[in-house]
Length: 278
Image 1 (cartoon, rainbow, N blue to C red):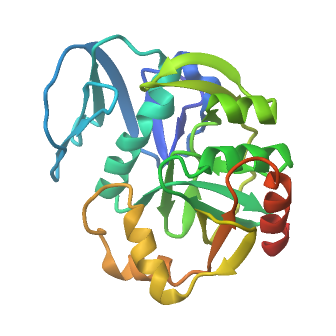
Image 2 (cartoon, rainbow, N blue to C red):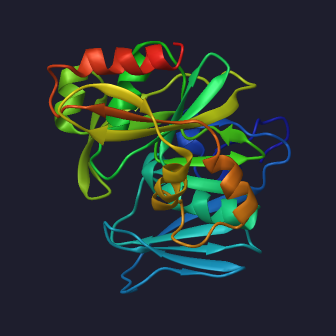
Image 3 (cartoon, rainbow, N blue to C red):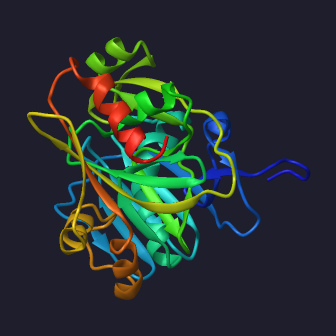
């Protein structure tokens, strides 16, 4: 980093090698480690992910592998075709963030997060469960979206993700949001730019997205929160700190159910924000 130039990053990592994507990143804090992102063309045939104390090898669903080296603070993306810096930052950075989070003693979850006042809520959903669409609608209401693909927590504090989220065709059309990118990561994407994140938000709890015949926002019992969180761990390995994981599971949790389709989409979103005090 040149003298006098502000380092940028996401998920609590300063990033090198993606200068042209700086507008999608946030100012890096001095204590954030700097990870260098490198993209090379190649073919790999790894059958499973490998995670060690110093090195990780992660498969990409779209083809390729990510090689993460702890000592060198380096992530190499080996892909059939070169990726742009914007693609590296989102969506390809998310699994690197999960690996680095574990090495740094942080917690990570496949999910997003948004702020209502000073409170930040994690938003978790199964694949194609409407997470990004819900976050895009929340952003349209003027509320800050903290992250989309990966939620990284450090000492109860959420780290901001890249300042973009990607939508599918129908959601982009219905919400009149996003710029068409083409196929990125094995699917078509419409990219929506997100606003800045105000400092000082505290992590308050969890929203679990679900489909149902009616709109409902109901508390999730403590006995159910632990297994639900386990399903959304950023890495498919036991939590680094079981005690801290139990503390996260003890935070309030809500199940947000709504029907498929768009007829009651606005009503459902409004009900959720009302329950959270927004």
